[in-house]
Length: 266
Length: 254
Image (cartoon, rainbow over all chains, first blue to last red; front, side, top):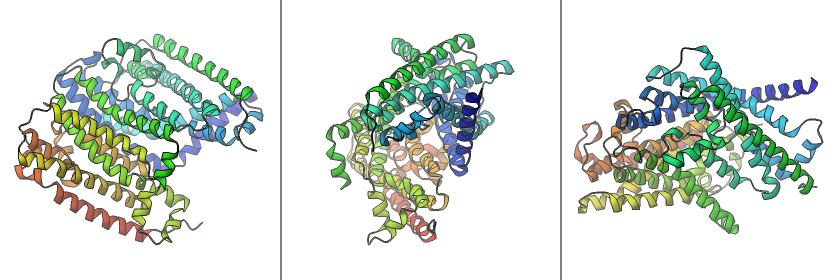
């Protein structure tokens, strides 16, 4: 009971911490809107040539673009959440202090990252999405149940995203420098989540492989739930399975790291 | 000094350059995927889009190589390390630009060159002397225009400090925009990037001449040869903005 309160407090603190950067948030909203504009026009040109590409009509393709812009920061699709700080603590050896604390390391960072995600969703996501929905023809469901199911998929996406970045951050125990790993996280996140192009447009077997990877939980899965292209239950099972598998892998790697690796610093 | 320090870790350097090629190449992979589904985009074929892409990324890559770090100015204003540069006997802009000069940013330029090479080899153009001559002029002018955007954006950060993402909208957003044909975009947007922020002169207008395409906004033919003039104008304005920003700078004083 008390432990639950601790993690809520961590999440709230993280939310408030990100909420203090108002100018940065406003700048992020502006940038997301500009990138959304550019993408919408290119998608419209693409769907002009091939209507119903990937099973979307034009309005659904436009909606997909603005969803991507709305979820980009919240789900840390190209990274940029807790992992920079966590990697730095591993590199400097400060993580040894964290391991002494009476809180679970993984849950602590998960709570912190979910607080950040919620703020980014509200602060950086809602406005670009509203702009896109007002200016371009979009396909949005009337049923509040679908919106609820969508938010569930976003939450699971946030957990999968966290689990991936937690694994990446732990690699610093062995590598000491996380720059290369962050770059890999960025590349995989941008490409395999469907941020550059919806995954259902990827052709053939290549498309099937990319859609089976955990990254498709990040953008493609919530988008398909909102656009009525996927069954929520099946989506949850897919996302949940990846979340459990990756979180468990994180635990294993963490215990291996703390048992075998000598922590840096004096 | 930064070059030497980068080259010390040779394997790491090669990895990060390759990573950068891969990372910046993602948007071209997206274009390739699009063309796996369609034959033309906005009326342009794949080699033609690759031509636009190559010109945009090569110009941007050069500007980014030289002026990339100025985008980080807001951080220096916030944490006060800008003061350290102020007391040094060298021009401020040169110091900020050379800060952490990262050769790995070469990746973007190289990747642009690769695509441009492919485009030049496969695009269907009757090469004439003016067209050939226009190529290097376009690349240099485009780089200067992007450099001006970088510097003007940095000048803006003297005022806004932690709003560096606005700059990304114009730099990274600009180069992304130019990778697609002008026919794809709405008229208002094309007008904006022609007359307000003259990115259209980086590649759209000279490329329209080379490819023999109708000009965006029905501009006269000779505008394809104006990028150097536009570049000089942009650099002058960016220089003024930089000086104004620097003059308005008050240290954090904490």
